[in-house]
Image 1 (cartoon, rainbow, N blue to C red):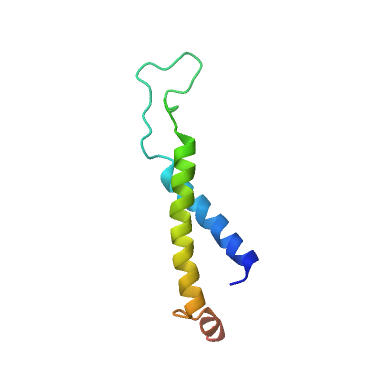
Image 2: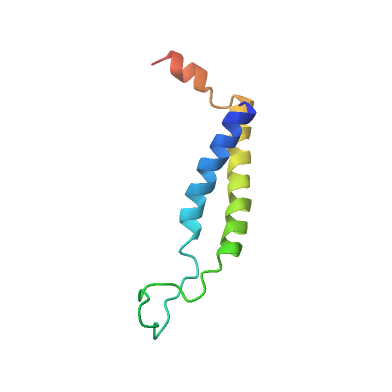
Length: 82
């Protein structure tokens, strides 16, 4: 895996993990202010969620890189068989 494809894979993994992490700990306020959505989170804690997403995505990316680099699953062989 080259560095450009590695960055692209990390980018995709980061976004997928972000959408999995976003709902964690979200609580809607009991009495929302007028003009705001009732489902708007009280404290979204986005910086914490971005940090968790970055760490989890790095671990997932490292696993993907290890599988690709070790040829444990040979994608080139799979492509030849198609």
